[in-house]
Length: 392
Image 1 (tube, rainbow, N blue to C red):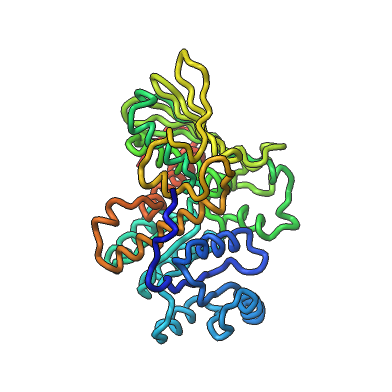
Image 2: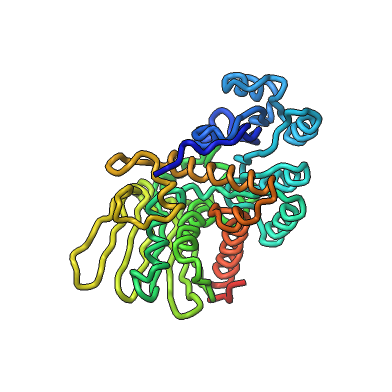
């Protein structure tokens, strides 16, 4: 069961860049960070418009003098204060992630960043090097991996319950952008603009979520080669895709596929992962996150429910169980579990506690690097006639 007694003497003084009024993701960052009282929002660069930034920050209870329309000014001014910020979350369009992460790390701050971490593997590896030299943490908000049943799936695979892993099916295929919604929605408009979103749309926006679930559940499987085909069914989105299929060959002989889409008409989320082994299969669906299908060849299908005593009793999974079995947990609990672990990692880094860092799971900079690496390889394949490419 989740340990609510674990506390810091003082919460981490925390700021946000982006996530202001109208943000699709700002509230879940703030609510999740506040959940366990490990973080305290004391400053923010919520909006590039000074009046809107101050007005929004005041409504959140942030001192107006600590609401900045320029994140670089925020770093400079906060560094002068004895009670200045210690960590920052970046909830901005993709094109700003690299420069903001880099500036934050160089300012001595821990960083939590939306995905994709940046545009290129080279940039991501540079951020990792800076983080290591500054003894800072980079966390990446793969927000679905805080669910208890994701950790249950990983434990079952590690324990050999599925046998030898043969097939991994990944998908995140919603239908909310089956029409040109970006014409009246700025939050979608930047996602389909290459200069802001980068070289992909749905692969980076939702495909990386499904891919990280597979990485987490089956950490020892490495991609050997892949082939990607992508489409722009809403023609104005070209060259960015609103639908993509990726085939993967893993080292050791396993295979996988990823379907990422924003034009799956009628689909709500449809983020699912199915891992098939030589003895059994498991399947998880984010619209029913408290259950895990477990199907053993020749036996009746089972539905495993969150919070039960029959689940694996590891620290990561149990500590994700916040309210006991039978009660439905959702995305806010999953995100809160991520922010909880980000805080523990920051605290351990500050104390030089390598043992805790080595044994604490959280989606960190390496997870961010692999997400960017996937996108680079998919674009290379798709833009070269959907050819198989060696994964690099």
